[in-house]
Image (cartoon, rainbow over all chains, first blue to last red; front, side):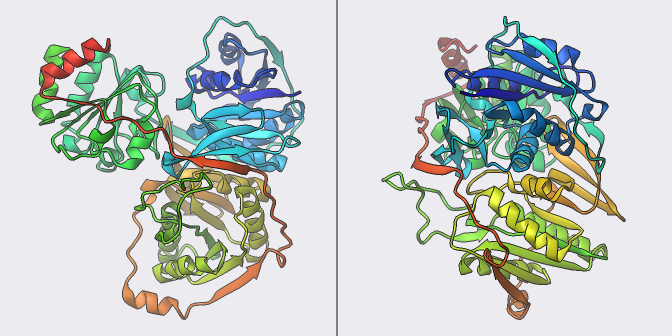
Length: 313
Length: 249
Protein backbone atom coordinates (compact mmCIF):
# COMPACT_ATOMS: atom_id res chain seq x y z
CA UNK A 1 0.00 0.00 0.00
CA UNK A 2 1.02 3.60 -0.03
CA UNK A 3 0.72 6.86 1.78
CA UNK A 4 -0.06 10.38 0.60
CA UNK A 5 1.92 13.51 1.46
CA UNK A 6 0.35 16.91 0.79
CA UNK A 7 2.64 19.93 0.74
CA UNK A 8 0.95 22.72 2.71
CA UNK A 9 0.61 26.13 1.13
CA UNK A 10 0.80 28.98 3.62
CA UNK A 11 2.04 32.53 4.05
CA UNK A 12 3.95 31.91 7.26
CA UNK A 13 0.92 32.72 9.33
CA UNK A 14 -2.18 31.07 7.87
CA UNK A 15 -2.72 27.80 6.08
CA UNK A 16 -4.02 28.50 2.57
CA UNK A 17 -7.46 26.91 1.89
CA UNK A 18 -5.94 25.16 -1.14
CA UNK A 19 -4.38 22.66 1.28
CA UNK A 20 -7.78 21.60 2.66
CA UNK A 21 -8.95 21.05 -0.93
CA UNK A 22 -6.01 18.74 -1.56
CA UNK A 23 -7.04 16.78 1.54
CA UNK A 24 -10.47 16.21 -0.03
CA UNK A 25 -8.77 14.86 -3.15
CA UNK A 26 -6.61 12.58 -1.00
CA UNK A 27 -9.77 11.24 0.67
CA UNK A 28 -10.71 9.68 -2.69
CA UNK A 29 -7.77 7.27 -2.43
CA UNK A 30 -9.30 4.43 -0.47
CA UNK A 31 -6.97 2.79 2.01
CA UNK A 32 -4.20 5.41 1.82
CA UNK A 33 -3.32 7.49 4.87
CA UNK A 34 -2.73 11.16 4.29
CA UNK A 35 -0.06 13.37 5.89
CA UNK A 36 0.65 17.06 5.45
CA UNK A 37 4.15 18.56 5.29
CA UNK A 38 4.60 22.11 6.58
CA UNK A 39 7.85 23.76 5.53
CA UNK A 40 8.22 27.05 7.35
CA UNK A 41 10.56 29.17 9.43
CA UNK A 42 8.43 28.47 12.49
CA UNK A 43 5.63 26.11 11.54
CA UNK A 44 3.87 25.76 14.91
CA UNK A 45 0.74 27.75 14.06
CA UNK A 46 0.38 26.37 10.52
CA UNK A 47 0.84 22.81 11.79
CA UNK A 48 -1.88 23.30 14.39
CA UNK A 49 -4.24 24.48 11.65
CA UNK A 50 -3.30 21.58 9.37
CA UNK A 51 -3.79 19.07 12.20
CA UNK A 52 -7.48 19.98 12.47
CA UNK A 53 -8.27 18.96 8.88
CA UNK A 54 -10.47 15.90 8.80
CA UNK A 55 -8.76 12.85 7.33
CA UNK A 56 -5.16 13.85 8.07
CA UNK A 57 -3.06 11.34 10.05
CA UNK A 58 0.22 13.18 10.64
CA UNK A 59 1.49 16.68 10.15
CA UNK A 60 5.20 16.73 9.40
CA UNK A 61 6.78 19.94 10.63
CA UNK A 62 10.04 21.00 8.96
CA UNK A 63 11.37 24.24 10.42
CA UNK A 64 14.25 26.02 8.73
CA UNK A 65 15.12 29.70 8.37
CA UNK A 66 15.50 29.04 4.65
CA UNK A 67 11.80 28.10 4.54
CA UNK A 68 10.58 31.56 5.52
CA UNK A 69 9.39 32.13 1.95
CA UNK A 70 8.24 29.43 -0.42
CA UNK A 71 11.01 29.11 -3.00
CA UNK A 72 10.76 26.01 -5.15
CA UNK A 73 14.54 25.61 -5.40
CA UNK A 74 14.77 25.50 -1.58
CA UNK A 75 11.61 23.48 -0.87
CA UNK A 76 12.05 20.82 -3.57
CA UNK A 77 15.13 19.01 -2.21
CA UNK A 78 13.54 18.85 1.25
CA UNK A 79 10.34 17.37 -0.15
CA UNK A 80 12.32 14.92 -2.26
CA UNK A 81 13.92 13.77 1.00
CA UNK A 82 10.54 13.46 2.76
CA UNK A 83 9.22 11.53 -0.25
CA UNK A 84 11.02 8.32 0.76
CA UNK A 85 8.08 7.21 2.92
CA UNK A 86 5.34 8.12 0.45
CA UNK A 87 3.72 6.74 -2.70
CA UNK A 88 1.86 9.96 -3.61
CA UNK A 89 2.96 13.59 -3.28
CA UNK A 90 0.41 16.33 -3.88
CA UNK A 91 0.43 20.09 -4.05
CA UNK A 92 -2.37 22.47 -5.01
CA UNK A 93 -2.61 23.72 -8.60
CA UNK A 94 -2.01 27.27 -7.40
CA UNK A 95 1.06 29.25 -8.43
CA UNK A 96 2.74 27.81 -5.30
CA UNK A 97 2.12 24.19 -6.27
CA UNK A 98 2.72 24.67 -9.99
CA UNK A 99 6.10 26.23 -9.25
CA UNK A 100 7.15 23.57 -6.77
CA UNK A 101 5.83 20.13 -7.71
CA UNK A 102 7.48 19.71 -11.14
CA UNK A 103 10.82 20.52 -9.50
CA UNK A 104 10.12 17.77 -6.94
CA UNK A 105 9.09 15.30 -9.65
CA UNK A 106 12.26 15.94 -11.66
CA UNK A 107 14.46 15.44 -8.58
CA UNK A 108 12.70 12.09 -8.04
CA UNK A 109 13.00 11.21 -11.74
CA UNK A 110 9.25 10.73 -12.17
CA UNK A 111 6.50 12.36 -14.22
CA UNK A 112 4.00 14.81 -12.81
CA UNK A 113 0.25 14.73 -13.27
CA UNK A 114 -0.96 18.33 -13.46
CA UNK A 115 -4.41 19.45 -12.28
CA UNK A 116 -6.06 16.26 -11.05
CA UNK A 117 -9.80 16.89 -11.29
CA UNK A 118 -10.98 13.41 -10.40
CA UNK A 119 -9.48 10.20 -9.08
CA UNK A 120 -10.38 6.93 -10.80
CA UNK A 121 -7.94 4.67 -8.94
CA UNK A 122 -4.67 5.03 -7.06
CA UNK A 123 -2.88 5.36 -10.39
CA UNK A 124 -5.54 6.74 -12.73
CA UNK A 125 -6.83 10.30 -12.90
CA UNK A 126 -8.70 12.78 -15.01
CA UNK A 127 -7.20 16.13 -15.93
CA UNK A 128 -8.06 18.99 -18.31
CA UNK A 129 -6.03 19.88 -21.41
CA UNK A 130 -6.49 22.63 -24.03
CA UNK A 131 -7.80 25.10 -21.44
CA UNK A 132 -10.40 22.60 -20.30
CA UNK A 133 -11.76 21.94 -23.79
CA UNK A 134 -10.86 18.29 -23.42
CA UNK A 135 -10.53 15.98 -20.43
CA UNK A 136 -8.00 13.16 -20.51
CA UNK A 137 -7.98 10.03 -18.41
CA UNK A 138 -4.38 9.11 -17.61
CA UNK A 139 -2.62 6.20 -15.94
CA UNK A 140 0.71 6.39 -14.18
CA UNK A 141 3.06 3.44 -13.59
CA UNK A 142 2.35 1.77 -10.22
CA UNK A 143 6.07 1.36 -9.51
CA UNK A 144 6.66 5.14 -9.64
CA UNK A 145 5.76 7.68 -7.01
CA UNK A 146 2.82 9.81 -8.14
CA UNK A 147 3.70 13.50 -8.04
CA UNK A 148 0.70 15.66 -8.86
CA UNK A 149 -1.01 18.99 -8.51
CA UNK A 150 -4.66 18.97 -7.47
CA UNK A 151 -7.05 21.23 -9.37
CA UNK A 152 -8.40 23.03 -6.31
CA UNK A 153 -11.61 24.19 -8.02
CA UNK A 154 -12.63 20.54 -8.40
CA UNK A 155 -12.65 19.88 -4.65
CA UNK A 156 -14.36 21.38 -1.62
CA UNK A 157 -12.20 22.15 1.39
CA UNK A 158 -11.99 19.27 3.88
CA UNK A 159 -13.88 19.88 7.11
CA UNK A 160 -12.18 20.68 10.40
CA UNK A 161 -12.54 18.72 13.61
CA UNK A 162 -9.61 16.37 13.09
CA UNK A 163 -6.72 15.96 15.48
CA UNK A 164 -3.64 14.75 13.64
CA UNK A 165 -0.37 14.31 15.46
CA UNK A 166 2.41 16.80 14.73
CA UNK A 167 5.81 15.29 14.15
CA UNK A 168 8.96 17.43 14.03
CA UNK A 169 11.47 16.42 11.36
CA UNK A 170 15.00 17.67 10.89
CA UNK A 171 16.21 17.06 7.36
CA UNK A 172 19.83 16.59 6.43
CA UNK A 173 19.66 18.17 2.99
CA UNK A 174 21.96 20.66 1.37
CA UNK A 175 19.98 23.73 0.25
CA UNK A 176 21.03 26.04 -2.58
CA UNK A 177 21.70 29.74 -2.01
CA UNK A 178 21.29 30.76 -5.67
CA UNK A 179 17.70 31.99 -5.28
CA UNK A 180 16.69 34.76 -2.87
CA UNK A 181 13.26 36.08 -1.97
CA UNK A 182 12.92 39.88 -2.09
CA UNK A 183 9.32 41.02 -1.63
CA UNK A 184 5.65 40.50 -2.40
CA UNK A 185 3.23 43.25 -3.22
CA UNK A 186 -0.40 42.35 -3.36
CA UNK A 187 -3.72 44.05 -3.01
CA UNK A 188 -4.75 41.35 -0.50
CA UNK A 189 -8.27 41.72 -1.83
CA UNK A 190 -8.65 45.05 -0.01
CA UNK A 191 -9.89 43.27 3.12
CA UNK A 192 -12.52 41.36 1.12
CA UNK A 193 -12.85 37.56 1.09
CA UNK A 194 -10.28 35.80 -1.05
CA UNK A 195 -11.17 34.48 -4.48
CA UNK A 196 -10.52 30.84 -3.66
CA UNK A 197 -12.69 30.61 -0.57
CA UNK A 198 -15.42 33.20 -1.22
CA UNK A 199 -18.92 31.80 -1.79
CA UNK A 200 -19.80 34.80 -3.96
CA UNK A 201 -17.44 36.38 -6.51
CA UNK A 202 -18.21 39.49 -8.55
CA UNK A 203 -15.93 40.15 -11.51
CA UNK A 204 -15.59 43.13 -13.78
CA UNK A 205 -14.27 43.27 -17.30
CA UNK A 206 -13.31 45.74 -19.96
CA UNK A 207 -16.91 46.93 -19.98
CA UNK A 208 -16.16 48.94 -16.84
CA UNK A 209 -14.07 51.24 -18.99
CA UNK A 210 -11.68 52.58 -16.35
CA UNK A 211 -9.96 51.96 -13.04
CA UNK A 212 -12.24 54.58 -11.49
CA UNK A 213 -15.41 52.87 -12.68
CA UNK A 214 -14.19 49.62 -11.15
CA UNK A 215 -15.28 51.14 -7.81
CA UNK A 216 -18.81 50.07 -8.83
CA UNK A 217 -17.71 46.44 -8.64
CA UNK A 218 -16.13 46.94 -5.21
CA UNK A 219 -19.30 48.59 -3.87
CA UNK A 220 -21.52 45.80 -5.07
CA UNK A 221 -19.10 43.19 -3.74
CA UNK A 222 -19.10 44.84 -0.31
CA UNK A 223 -22.88 44.85 -0.35
CA UNK A 224 -22.87 41.06 -0.89
CA UNK A 225 -19.77 40.18 1.12
CA UNK A 226 -18.24 38.96 -2.12
CA UNK A 227 -14.69 38.64 -3.40
CA UNK A 228 -13.70 40.77 -6.39
CA UNK A 229 -12.44 39.21 -9.59
CA UNK A 230 -11.54 40.53 -13.01
CA UNK A 231 -11.07 39.41 -16.57
CA UNK A 232 -7.65 39.40 -18.16
CA UNK A 233 -8.69 42.36 -20.30
CA UNK A 234 -9.46 44.42 -17.19
CA UNK A 235 -6.10 43.53 -15.62
CA UNK A 236 -4.21 44.21 -18.87
CA UNK A 237 -5.94 47.59 -19.08
CA UNK A 238 -4.72 48.43 -15.57
CA UNK A 239 -8.16 48.67 -13.95
CA UNK A 240 -7.16 46.24 -11.19
CA UNK A 241 -4.15 44.24 -9.92
CA UNK A 242 -3.19 40.82 -11.33
CA UNK A 243 -4.08 38.94 -8.14
CA UNK A 244 -7.76 39.47 -8.98
CA UNK A 245 -7.54 37.84 -12.41
CA UNK A 246 -9.88 34.92 -12.95
CA UNK A 247 -9.29 32.55 -15.85
CA UNK A 248 -6.80 30.14 -17.33
CA UNK A 249 -3.99 32.57 -16.57
CA UNK A 250 -5.02 33.76 -13.15
CA UNK A 251 -7.17 31.87 -10.73
CA UNK A 252 -9.57 29.01 -11.36
CA UNK A 253 -12.42 29.30 -8.90
CA UNK A 254 -15.61 27.49 -7.88
CA UNK A 255 -17.87 29.82 -5.88
CA UNK A 256 -21.57 29.20 -5.25
CA UNK A 257 -22.41 32.36 -7.16
CA UNK A 258 -20.34 34.09 -9.83
CA UNK A 259 -21.47 37.42 -11.27
CA UNK A 260 -19.64 38.54 -14.43
CA UNK A 261 -20.18 42.20 -15.24
CA UNK A 262 -18.98 43.72 -18.49
CA UNK A 263 -17.10 40.52 -19.34
CA UNK A 264 -17.59 39.14 -22.84
CA UNK A 265 -16.52 35.62 -21.88
CA UNK A 266 -13.35 34.71 -23.73
CA UNK A 267 -12.62 30.99 -23.52
CA UNK A 268 -9.68 31.70 -21.19
CA UNK A 269 -12.06 33.37 -18.76
CA UNK A 270 -14.71 30.65 -18.98
CA UNK A 271 -12.02 28.09 -18.08
CA UNK A 272 -11.63 29.82 -14.74
CA UNK A 273 -15.31 29.94 -13.79
CA UNK A 274 -17.08 26.90 -15.14
CA UNK A 275 -17.03 25.14 -11.79
CA UNK A 276 -19.14 27.89 -10.22
CA UNK A 277 -22.54 26.57 -9.11
CA UNK A 278 -24.44 29.53 -10.58
CA UNK A 279 -23.11 32.00 -13.13
CA UNK A 280 -24.80 35.36 -13.68
CA UNK A 281 -23.78 37.51 -16.66
CA UNK A 282 -24.51 41.18 -17.19
CA UNK A 283 -23.38 42.60 -20.51
CA UNK A 284 -24.66 45.15 -23.00
CA UNK A 285 -23.85 42.85 -25.95
CA UNK A 286 -26.58 40.21 -26.30
CA UNK A 287 -24.23 38.14 -28.47
CA UNK A 288 -21.43 37.99 -25.88
CA UNK A 289 -20.24 34.37 -25.46
CA UNK A 290 -20.62 34.62 -21.68
CA UNK A 291 -24.40 34.22 -22.18
CA UNK A 292 -23.84 30.77 -23.69
CA UNK A 293 -22.75 29.43 -20.31
CA UNK A 294 -24.52 31.76 -17.87
CA UNK A 295 -27.37 30.37 -15.74
CA UNK A 296 -28.93 33.81 -15.57
CA UNK A 297 -28.25 36.47 -18.18
CA UNK A 298 -29.16 40.13 -18.29
CA UNK A 299 -28.52 42.28 -21.35
CA UNK A 300 -28.13 45.94 -20.50
CA UNK A 301 -25.96 48.84 -19.45
CA UNK A 302 -23.96 47.94 -16.37
CA UNK A 303 -23.82 51.57 -15.28
CA UNK A 304 -27.59 51.58 -14.73
CA UNK A 305 -27.91 47.96 -13.62
CA UNK A 306 -25.26 47.99 -10.84
CA UNK A 307 -26.87 50.87 -8.89
CA UNK A 308 -30.27 49.19 -9.26
CA UNK A 309 -28.85 45.93 -7.91
CA UNK A 310 -27.34 47.75 -4.96
CA UNK A 311 -30.77 49.07 -4.03
CA UNK A 312 -32.49 45.71 -4.52
CA UNK A 313 -29.99 43.43 -2.78
CA UNK B 1 28.31 38.67 -23.16
CA UNK B 2 26.77 35.32 -23.51
CA UNK B 3 23.82 33.65 -24.99
CA UNK B 4 20.13 33.05 -24.36
CA UNK B 5 18.39 29.83 -25.28
CA UNK B 6 14.65 30.02 -26.02
CA UNK B 7 12.46 26.92 -26.32
CA UNK B 8 9.67 27.01 -28.90
CA UNK B 9 6.93 24.39 -28.92
CA UNK B 10 4.83 23.76 -31.99
CA UNK B 11 1.27 23.81 -30.68
CA UNK B 12 -2.27 24.12 -31.97
CA UNK B 13 -2.93 27.80 -32.68
CA UNK B 14 -4.69 29.54 -29.80
CA UNK B 15 -7.57 30.61 -32.07
CA UNK B 16 -8.49 27.03 -32.96
CA UNK B 17 -11.61 25.64 -31.31
CA UNK B 18 -10.50 22.23 -30.15
CA UNK B 19 -12.76 19.25 -30.79
CA UNK B 20 -12.48 15.80 -29.26
CA UNK B 21 -12.48 12.81 -31.63
CA UNK B 22 -15.76 10.90 -31.40
CA UNK B 23 -13.93 7.66 -30.49
CA UNK B 24 -12.18 9.33 -27.54
CA UNK B 25 -8.71 8.70 -28.94
CA UNK B 26 -7.59 12.32 -28.76
CA UNK B 27 -8.37 15.75 -30.17
CA UNK B 28 -8.72 16.52 -33.86
CA UNK B 29 -5.45 17.98 -35.15
CA UNK B 30 -5.72 17.13 -38.87
CA UNK B 31 -5.72 20.29 -40.93
CA UNK B 32 -5.60 22.45 -37.82
CA UNK B 33 -3.44 25.58 -37.83
CA UNK B 34 -0.22 25.15 -35.84
CA UNK B 35 1.79 27.99 -34.32
CA UNK B 36 4.49 28.76 -31.80
CA UNK B 37 3.03 28.26 -28.33
CA UNK B 38 2.08 31.86 -27.40
CA UNK B 39 3.90 31.81 -24.05
CA UNK B 40 7.08 30.71 -25.86
CA UNK B 41 6.65 33.58 -28.30
CA UNK B 42 6.63 35.95 -25.33
CA UNK B 43 9.78 34.25 -24.03
CA UNK B 44 11.50 34.82 -27.38
CA UNK B 45 10.41 38.45 -27.50
CA UNK B 46 11.99 39.00 -24.08
CA UNK B 47 15.26 37.40 -25.21
CA UNK B 48 15.34 39.62 -28.31
CA UNK B 49 14.77 42.72 -26.19
CA UNK B 50 17.63 41.71 -23.91
CA UNK B 51 19.89 41.34 -26.95
CA UNK B 52 18.72 44.70 -28.32
CA UNK B 53 19.72 46.30 -25.02
CA UNK B 54 23.19 44.83 -25.51
CA UNK B 55 22.91 42.50 -22.53
CA UNK B 56 23.46 39.35 -24.54
CA UNK B 57 25.15 38.55 -27.84
CA UNK B 58 23.14 35.71 -29.23
CA UNK B 59 19.62 34.28 -29.12
CA UNK B 60 19.26 30.61 -30.04
CA UNK B 61 15.86 28.97 -30.51
CA UNK B 62 15.35 25.25 -29.96
CA UNK B 63 12.41 23.01 -30.76
CA UNK B 64 11.85 19.29 -30.35
CA UNK B 65 9.72 17.34 -32.80
CA UNK B 66 9.25 16.20 -36.36
CA UNK B 67 10.49 18.31 -39.27
CA UNK B 68 7.18 20.17 -39.07
CA UNK B 69 8.57 22.10 -36.09
CA UNK B 70 11.14 23.72 -38.42
CA UNK B 71 8.24 25.98 -39.37
CA UNK B 72 8.10 27.31 -35.80
CA UNK B 73 11.89 27.63 -35.68
CA UNK B 74 11.75 29.69 -38.89
CA UNK B 75 9.12 31.90 -37.25
CA UNK B 76 11.53 32.36 -34.34
CA UNK B 77 14.36 33.23 -36.73
CA UNK B 78 12.10 35.67 -38.54
CA UNK B 79 11.27 37.35 -35.22
CA UNK B 80 14.99 37.86 -34.79
CA UNK B 81 16.69 34.80 -33.30
CA UNK B 82 20.23 34.26 -34.58
CA UNK B 83 20.13 30.52 -35.14
CA UNK B 84 18.00 27.47 -34.49
CA UNK B 85 18.38 23.91 -33.25
CA UNK B 86 15.91 21.15 -34.02
CA UNK B 87 15.94 17.97 -31.97
CA UNK B 88 14.34 15.57 -34.39
CA UNK B 89 11.96 12.92 -33.02
CA UNK B 90 8.71 11.23 -33.96
CA UNK B 91 7.88 10.58 -30.31
CA UNK B 92 5.37 12.62 -28.41
CA UNK B 93 7.46 13.56 -25.40
CA UNK B 94 6.50 14.16 -21.80
CA UNK B 95 7.88 17.22 -19.96
CA UNK B 96 10.49 15.18 -18.05
CA UNK B 97 12.05 13.91 -21.28
CA UNK B 98 11.86 17.38 -22.82
CA UNK B 99 13.73 18.68 -19.76
CA UNK B 100 16.34 15.91 -20.11
CA UNK B 101 16.89 16.79 -23.75
CA UNK B 102 17.20 20.48 -22.91
CA UNK B 103 19.83 19.69 -20.27
CA UNK B 104 21.89 18.05 -23.04
CA UNK B 105 21.52 21.13 -25.23
CA UNK B 106 22.48 23.33 -22.28
CA UNK B 107 25.63 21.27 -21.71
CA UNK B 108 26.90 22.11 -25.19
CA UNK B 109 25.45 25.60 -25.64
CA UNK B 110 26.19 26.89 -22.10
CA UNK B 111 23.63 29.72 -22.13
CA UNK B 112 23.34 32.33 -19.35
CA UNK B 113 19.60 32.15 -19.48
CA UNK B 114 16.93 29.81 -20.75
CA UNK B 115 13.59 31.37 -21.49
CA UNK B 116 10.42 29.40 -22.22
CA UNK B 117 6.67 29.73 -21.80
CA UNK B 118 5.14 28.95 -18.42
CA UNK B 119 3.05 26.31 -20.13
CA UNK B 120 2.06 25.09 -23.58
CA UNK B 121 -1.55 25.70 -24.46
CA UNK B 122 -2.07 22.13 -25.67
CA UNK B 123 -1.14 19.93 -22.70
CA UNK B 124 -1.34 22.75 -20.11
CA UNK B 125 1.23 20.89 -18.02
CA UNK B 126 3.27 23.83 -16.75
CA UNK B 127 6.25 21.59 -15.90
CA UNK B 128 9.10 21.78 -18.40
CA UNK B 129 10.87 24.90 -17.10
CA UNK B 130 10.76 23.75 -13.49
CA UNK B 131 11.97 20.25 -14.39
CA UNK B 132 14.80 21.64 -16.48
CA UNK B 133 15.89 23.91 -13.60
CA UNK B 134 15.82 20.93 -11.22
CA UNK B 135 17.87 18.64 -13.46
CA UNK B 136 20.30 21.43 -14.25
CA UNK B 137 20.53 22.37 -10.56
CA UNK B 138 19.93 26.03 -11.32
CA UNK B 139 17.44 28.75 -10.20
CA UNK B 140 13.97 28.97 -11.68
CA UNK B 141 11.73 32.00 -11.99
CA UNK B 142 8.27 30.97 -13.14
CA UNK B 143 5.25 33.14 -14.12
CA UNK B 144 7.57 36.07 -14.85
CA UNK B 145 6.08 39.43 -15.81
CA UNK B 146 9.25 41.51 -15.45
CA UNK B 147 12.91 40.57 -15.83
CA UNK B 148 16.07 42.58 -15.16
CA UNK B 149 19.61 41.33 -15.65
CA UNK B 150 22.58 42.80 -13.81
CA UNK B 151 25.87 41.06 -14.38
CA UNK B 152 25.87 37.58 -12.89
CA UNK B 153 22.48 37.95 -11.20
CA UNK B 154 18.94 38.77 -12.27
CA UNK B 155 15.73 40.00 -10.68
CA UNK B 156 12.31 38.76 -11.71
CA UNK B 157 8.79 39.82 -10.82
CA UNK B 158 6.51 36.79 -10.69
CA UNK B 159 2.73 36.85 -11.04
CA UNK B 160 1.61 34.72 -8.09
CA UNK B 161 -1.84 34.23 -6.58
CA UNK B 162 -1.02 36.68 -3.78
CA UNK B 163 0.11 39.43 -6.15
CA UNK B 164 3.57 40.22 -7.47
CA UNK B 165 6.57 38.47 -5.96
CA UNK B 166 10.11 39.67 -6.59
CA UNK B 167 13.02 37.24 -6.41
CA UNK B 168 16.71 37.60 -7.12
CA UNK B 169 18.85 34.77 -8.41
CA UNK B 170 22.23 33.88 -9.83
CA UNK B 171 22.78 33.14 -13.51
CA UNK B 172 22.53 30.85 -15.35
CA UNK B 173 18.85 30.30 -14.66
CA UNK B 174 15.54 29.20 -16.17
CA UNK B 175 12.78 31.76 -16.73
CA UNK B 176 9.19 30.91 -17.66
CA UNK B 177 7.14 33.73 -19.11
CA UNK B 178 3.67 34.87 -18.17
CA UNK B 179 1.35 36.86 -20.43
CA UNK B 180 2.19 40.33 -19.24
CA UNK B 181 5.97 40.04 -19.70
CA UNK B 182 5.70 41.78 -23.08
CA UNK B 183 3.81 41.92 -26.35
CA UNK B 184 5.61 39.98 -29.06
CA UNK B 185 6.50 41.83 -32.25
CA UNK B 186 4.90 41.07 -35.59
CA UNK B 187 7.05 39.35 -38.15
CA UNK B 188 7.65 41.38 -41.32
CA UNK B 189 7.91 39.88 -44.80
CA UNK B 190 11.61 40.78 -45.37
CA UNK B 191 12.44 39.11 -42.06
CA UNK B 192 10.77 35.91 -43.21
CA UNK B 193 13.00 35.94 -46.29
CA UNK B 194 16.08 36.66 -44.18
CA UNK B 195 15.18 33.86 -41.77
CA UNK B 196 15.49 31.31 -44.58
CA UNK B 197 19.22 31.96 -44.71
CA UNK B 198 19.83 31.76 -40.97
CA UNK B 199 21.45 28.54 -39.67
CA UNK B 200 19.20 25.70 -38.51
CA UNK B 201 21.07 22.72 -37.07
CA UNK B 202 19.49 19.34 -36.49
CA UNK B 203 20.28 16.69 -33.94
CA UNK B 204 18.38 13.65 -32.69
CA UNK B 205 17.70 11.70 -29.50
CA UNK B 206 20.31 9.05 -30.29
CA UNK B 207 22.98 11.69 -30.66
CA UNK B 208 21.90 13.17 -27.34
CA UNK B 209 21.73 9.70 -25.76
CA UNK B 210 18.12 10.09 -24.63
CA UNK B 211 15.62 7.22 -24.66
CA UNK B 212 12.12 8.62 -24.26
CA UNK B 213 9.64 6.87 -22.00
CA UNK B 214 5.87 6.93 -21.73
CA UNK B 215 5.24 7.40 -18.05
CA UNK B 216 1.79 8.90 -18.28
CA UNK B 217 -0.48 6.82 -20.47
CA UNK B 218 -3.49 8.63 -21.92
CA UNK B 219 -6.34 6.12 -21.79
CA UNK B 220 -9.04 8.28 -23.33
CA UNK B 221 -10.04 11.82 -24.18
CA UNK B 222 -13.50 13.19 -23.49
CA UNK B 223 -15.33 16.43 -24.12
CA UNK B 224 -15.94 18.36 -20.93
CA UNK B 225 -19.48 18.33 -19.55
CA UNK B 226 -21.20 21.29 -21.20
CA UNK B 227 -22.89 24.00 -19.18
CA UNK B 228 -26.43 24.58 -20.31
CA UNK B 229 -27.44 27.98 -21.58
CA UNK B 230 -29.62 29.40 -18.83
CA UNK B 231 -32.41 31.87 -18.51
CA UNK B 232 -32.43 35.48 -19.70
CA UNK B 233 -34.02 38.07 -17.43
CA UNK B 234 -35.31 41.51 -18.47
CA UNK B 235 -34.02 43.79 -15.72
CA UNK B 236 -32.30 44.09 -12.35
CA UNK B 237 -35.51 43.40 -10.41
CA UNK B 238 -36.12 40.17 -12.28
CA UNK B 239 -32.49 39.16 -11.74
CA UNK B 240 -32.76 39.69 -7.99
CA UNK B 241 -36.06 37.77 -7.90
CA UNK B 242 -34.37 34.90 -9.72
CA UNK B 243 -31.44 34.91 -7.27
CA UNK B 244 -33.83 34.92 -4.32
CA UNK B 245 -35.75 32.01 -5.76
CA UNK B 246 -32.49 30.07 -5.94
CA UNK B 247 -31.60 31.07 -2.38
CA UNK B 248 -28.63 33.08 -3.62
CA UNK B 249 -29.73 36.51 -2.41
